[in-house]
Length: 168
Image 1: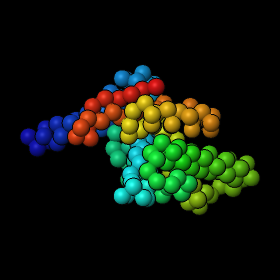
Image 2: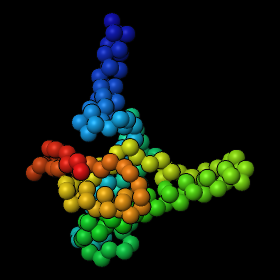
Image 3: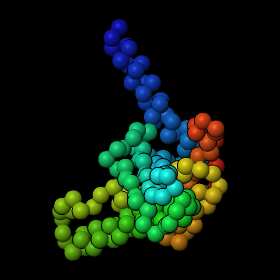
């Protein structure tokens, strides 16, 4: 009886995590979806802006890869400009780390000694907290960096719950 309950619990958990990622992949016709990164901008009293990146792998939060970005170049509450800064910093940093990692391998250096972090892993899908405007900002940044990553916007209802996805 206990084993049966555990099996059912495991199945429900898998459906909630891996199953949810597969469902999103199916909706968007993505061949595979393991890693998703979601981005949002928060403003403190309209003065200080912070960007956040949350990461899901196989449908589960990967908290060790979460990041916060203090907005450095944007004055005031401008979500689009702030998001552009966050995405540019995140993916430029990742590309630089990948290039350094490649050079180290070519030079015969084996140990990465912890210098390369979560930025070297690019997502299979980017989720934006917002609709068309946020998606367009992400697509602009990716285009400028010559990266091809699908982007989806999470359209919210009045209670700030996702009521739909805006894709391309």
